[in-house]
Length: 387
Image (cartoon, rainbow, N blue to C red):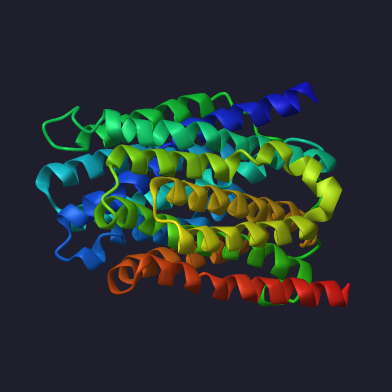
């Protein structure tokens, strides 16, 4: 048991360090985009393409893990991430928006494997300890939540080109994560192989539990990405709040995304997985209410904190429900299907955010978030009636 959880802690450390490039990009990606893009409407394109890259990388990452093993696949994708961060720095030196967008997409592609660290951690422990392992991995995000934005500002003047040094530091974090990954010992595959080939995705999706697991993650990411992607532009460029205040709000938001994982195992026992999904939707509702009434720094802080907590409840619930929603031997296909749908939906939300923040006000954007929330509530109600 000690060895099993030592693997979980090692993977959590890799996640905390290597994933710091993501919150770094979330803070400065749209600001850089606003400076380099030919039009303000394209300011959030780099962040959106990072999410598109993640959706594109999910299936290659899952197939690589099935054929090459988790460890080698993690290392290959981390290596890609290192080169990508250096490419982003080069794009800034050339003031090339297209090259910066390409580097953003490739960074998302490399993240596709790192997001599956949670599954590797859950496989390292007995199935009843899976939620605990997933929570530990999620908690590691607290470190990256603060590390990434700090690196973004620390590296801002590190080079003669603004923010180029930030991506150098991100590359160093990726390299450190890769070195730590060398000490990871993958868990042996459990004897749960299904006779014959795994079912096609269409047949798998006939399972209502799998649908609910995927919907929980998808709705969580859609609402979170739509609001968070546009926050730096709305807060810093439109409302005139300082970059330091914007950084603090983004940091606390990302911390709020992961900090509730300390209590999710207890919450599962108290209100069940589906109860936690309802709590996540309630937090999103609080985000909308605060945003409609307060545009101060503390108003943005309150919105983004509730947004992070709501995302955590929905994402962790979906992750925990997923292993119960497929047959033996289908784990890689189910994980790939889940992440592909989730990150594809996130990509659409991120792409829409840049257009939305240009053609409508902040309050209208928040009201739009009610649509996916309502769809999730209907699905939960149908699941309850079926049960």
